[in-house]
Image (cartoon, rainbow, N blue to C red):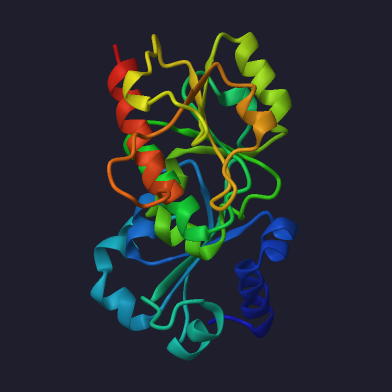
Length: 253
C-alpha cells in the first residue's frame, strides 16, 4: 500500500512547484496510462485500486515490468484533482525537450494563460502532425492537470519546451524557416498564404491581447482568418486549428 510520505509527494505534483522540483508529472486514467506505454516517457510508478485492477486485467498485464501498486479509494481521493477518480494514476518522468530537436514545423506560443486552450492546441497540433511546440516563460505549465486532460495524450508524441522566443525565431530564420504570425491587425488572409515546405513556424499570442507587435514584426507572413459574422474574435485554440488546416494543406507537397 501507499505511505503518507508518498501521498504527500504525489499530491505535490498537482502544483507547478512540485513538478519542477521533482521533474515528475502525474497522470490519471486508462486512456493516458495506455498511451504513455507507447511513448518515450519513463513511467516511475503506477497505483491502482483493487477494483480497477480486477476490471482492467489487460492493461495491468501491459504494465508488467513497471512498478505497479495497490491504493485504496480513500487514499486515491487524497491525491487526485478529479472528483471521481478512475482508479489508476501514474507518475512519469518526461523526456527532455529542446530547440535542437526541431527539424520542421513548429508552433510558438506567447503568454497563453488558459490550461484548456493550451491542451486543445497541443491536441490539435498533434492531429496535424506538428510535434514541436515552444512556450514563452509566462505560458501556463504544459503539465498542469487541466492541460494534460485537454490534450488527451498529445504530450506523449511531442517536443514541448520553453525558450527565448526572439533568439529562437532568429535561429529558425537562419535555418530557412518561414515565420507566420497570427495577427488580427493585418489585411492578409490565411487563405492566400503560400508556403513552399514543411519548414515553418506559426506564432500565436495571448488570449486577450494577441501577439506582441515586436514578435509579429519578426514574421515574414502576417495573416488572419477572414471574418464572416459579427463576433470580434475567435478562441485561440479554435484559430490554431483553422490555421493548421490551411497551412498543412498548402505545405504537404
